[in-house]
Length: 147
Image (tube, rainbow, N blue to C red; front, side, top):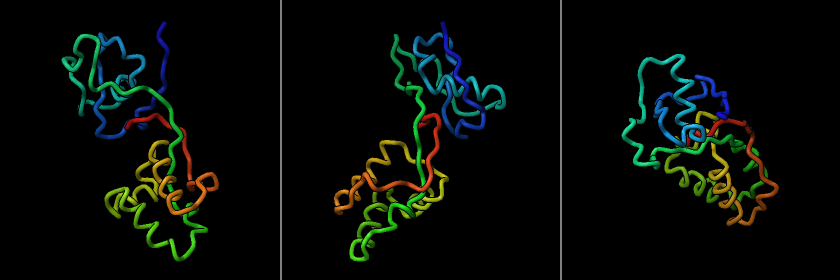
């Protein structure tokens, strides 16, 4: 019995490669296939995974269908950082994203942090001596993982 997954078309990132391969044995567990079913209701073109990606029963484009608790916003993370640590800590977090513009995109919610990325940021705070258990991002949202 196949489970119906309700991904809305607006949930699918604009340039996300979706899949329509009904022969794939992993389609019910793949976010690309679920996204393809949603995208088909509104889109008439876009990036997709070709059927020949499936080699035997393996697909390198497979992404596990899962719902994650994403986060964004850093103000509360830095709220009680001591002045002596602030600049260096902020530099480390920005460097983690590779650019200040990406830092701001995650801060403002244009991009969302996966649980793994959240842990990486909290680990930076830990290295500076701040307890990650008392740190929280400003916003959280349950969503499908399109990473």
